[in-house]
Length: 190
Image (cartoon, rainbow, N blue to C red; front, side):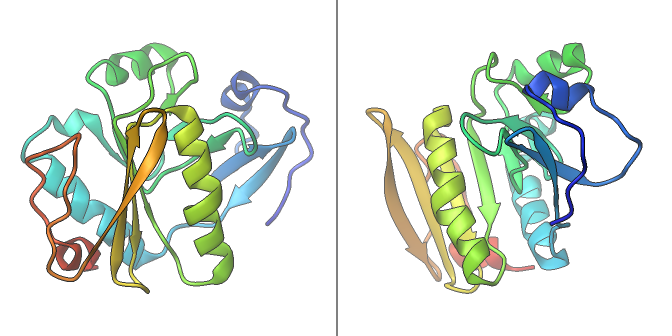
């Protein structure tokens, strides 16, 4: 991953920094690390979820890739494949002037990651991001894994994630969104 040279100490520094370059960056130990673009198929999967969520919650509360989520630990931010916001988040982000959720804001209701091929991507999504999302107190997180043909649903129970797997034609059950109505196969279509 390419690195740039500025030394940024806080998430606020990260949000204020603009060198005119395009793309997404994670702030890790004071340095910016470029995040590779999402694959076309994974982007399509996130858009499928976006369309499904819009049928029962406000479209303003559903953000496909691009929302910076401040995290505890390193890196200091993540860009989930899809984020379902709380009703107050859009106004807070407008006030902030950025598509970002800071640690001062309540955590989003749900984050979704779509696993790209490769051991490093699986490790990042199943371990690193999962741990950070749990520490951040995000009530629910889904890991869509096209290679395994599985959705791992993580729901916060007494301060820790409880894990449930869904495969094939199984309906993905969500404690946060009981009216969710897609199967694993429908969620993994690109």
